[in-house]
Length: 363
Image 1: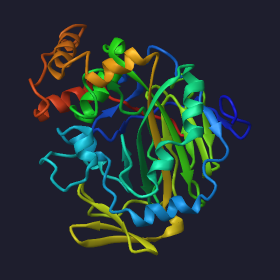
Image 2: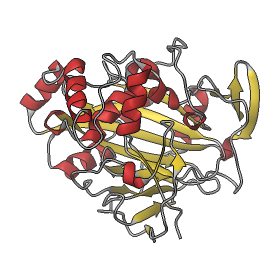
Image 3: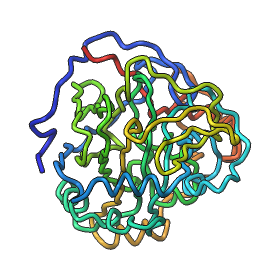
Image 4: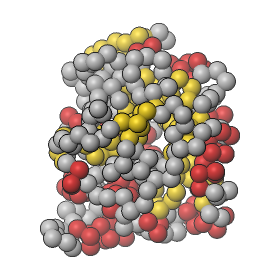
């Protein structure tokens, strides 16, 4: 394990002008429109070996499809856990083209293993020990393991931070877009649950590196491009990061994709499928596989007990606090809806509190 970024890091010069782009939440914005982080991320830590046999992770991926569009978490008014269940019963929600892309997700554990082999990943000693070391706290609760599979695509040009959780308002009872707005607003730091994320890679194809800003977007970025059986344990609710180009230059997503598009494996090749129609097929080696592990950390058992009991906020209280913030400042506006079922509210919060930031191309 190496503190900070290890000795394999590559620093990139980020002095180029930052463009205006469409981000996956459907907005067009420049960095000047982004909320600022009130504290720096904790220093990331590199793990140079994750598992003894990395091929078993790729086999688990082939065995446990289909994989779904993570853009559904941005679009849906359901809780994040309900969307992750991938039960085919999503609410009807408008979506933008920017929400749809050739990255597909599978949930392997949420509190408990959901697929064979996930228990060892959920209770991965290396991830847990490194997370405790990062915060200096002993009370750790491993919660999630999920995988992202990405077929060839060009660089997208934006960074993001991960979906946070708060005491009383978390993935079990709130949609991802509300949790994101709460995190970006920095209005809920007293109720924030501290989460550490380990991202591991099991990919030997072209490009596919992980770019990250350990000092926030105002600092330099670093590229981790050793994407075979390595991991970075990071403070990803605060540390911006992005996936680089996957596959050959000029790669694009196939036409015809929607939020319902899935990725399936026939045991050999991978297929992007929309309503039973195969839109594209890729060999296994062309599909980038990253695995994310998330754990909650607490200062003591009492803090964990409060979080488990939901002692903190309600969704209505969170909306009230956001309403007060929206109603202040130089451009006040009323809250666009009074419940998470409101698409107008979803659009408003995505516009005012986005976790996505345009990222300049590296020199």
